[in-house]
Length: 109
Image (cartoon, rainbow, N blue to C red; front, side, top):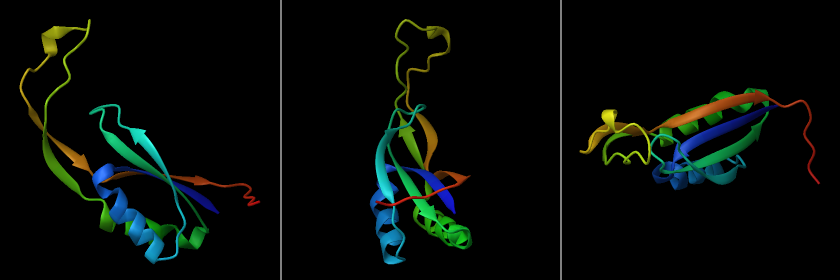
């Protein structure tokens, strides 16, 4: 058994959640915040048998797309202002960061 931990942008969260339900995969959703952009994310915890991992990865890939977005940088508070860029910059957001871990034991009560 594997535990899939997928961190996705909030904009992709509902679409991914619905796709997982349609394919009969259960997931736990946790609200999270990204460190770089300090933007809202959703972290999915999905437990599946080994032979279902690729199917779940395909669902994640189909529903979590990257996109370009203009972001206003956060001003450094007490930090080094030499490298601070005071105008919006275009960054790539979205997609998914996925971790797959071996589960030694699973219990459901």
